[in-house]
Length: 198
Length: 346
Image (cartoon, rainbow over all chains, first blue to last red; front, side):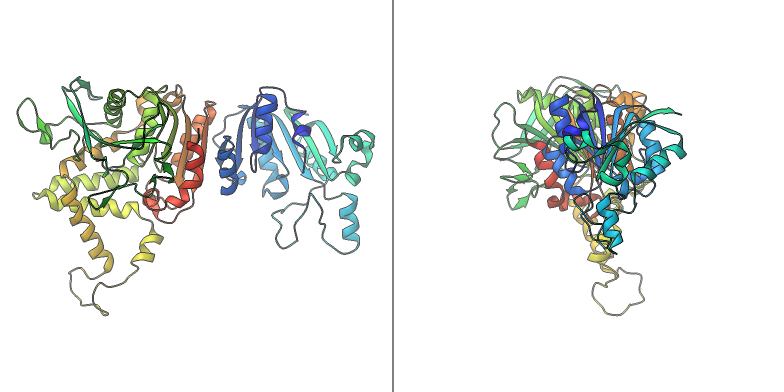
């Protein structure tokens, strides 16, 4: 889990936010209450759509693999994709779509290169932890992403990484951990990308 | 809980610029009005004012959806359903008497549009002294009325629920509408034409899966083919039965007029673009499509929702998983309730 306050920190007041894979709508609810944001969610699961409607959050049922067809260029201040990238069939396409629609793009993902994952691999087991709670046979995750690999993708795509924040779960850890250890030590990572290319 | 009649003596200028000097709307209401709890239910092509409860042994067309503690809770809400202008279920339509000639209007009845239906309903709402509706809800042609309500009277409702509808019929739906009208207009005996129109319509309201599950290739009486041209398959006799039943319930002229009203409905054409159509809406919208509906397919509802999103309107969209085709919104209420009920919560 990633704290809503953590993400909210990088979103300015009254922003128009599109949350891709918004789940039960908790992040949007938080942003609408704390930051007076205008929020829209997209999710594919009916139970999440029901949850959002119950919370009075505007939600659109759709498949992110279809891209953001129908959404105008630069029509959102922020487009968020939180802990969903590992489930996307065409990540490159979706990231491009997010940058087309959003002025600012925030992506978080579970880091498969976390030392605990590495240890599990070392002992011959597929990684399983709080951020990756599934068994190999029932996981919705189809992509194995590491902090290092994500940066490589951004480089290949010619994208400018505005901010890179390794997420350790506590603010204290985030303060004391040296950046060079992020690929080894953070369970999740947050990247903020902006429209302009290198 | 009986049908009431609203007689308007104010002239109603129609979209075609013709004027109806006076008109009548048949309507029913359920529940108790408390100032802010009125919900207007808009019916589809063959519907009437009798939406809920059982009256004289007959259940309302949305009986499963409207009632105490149901999806539209009559303990909480005051529900109004009026028969549309142009229909034959108590409201003014081609089968009514023209006050000028004292004869049936028949084909001299002016062509009615969805906007005309809504304008007439609005007069009824005013007559009932309701300033603002809690919600307007409807499916199919009812959904078209919902969209038109949101556009024409943006301050008159807080919520709109548009189910299995579209901002315009596609060519396929236009074609099926046309076949129905051809059937009626080309038969000397209009009831035969109406029956045929209903058969065609009925097929478009069902999904391939639902039809196959219910009838498959089953024969009505025999185990073996009789090598005869008479109806043998169950689906044949079912359609015949539906067609014939309909001729006792509906008037052919009204069917033609309502079908034409749906064909004319085109918000993008009327307002220049969908964006312009929805520019001034104020209500919160819930747009629902149905997974097995092939006559009002999902992309058309999505387009409505996305256009509203582009305009920063309050809108949600979902595709309801249901196997019964277009008619799911009448049959499969449990599939709709989880979304509609919380959306209607104040």
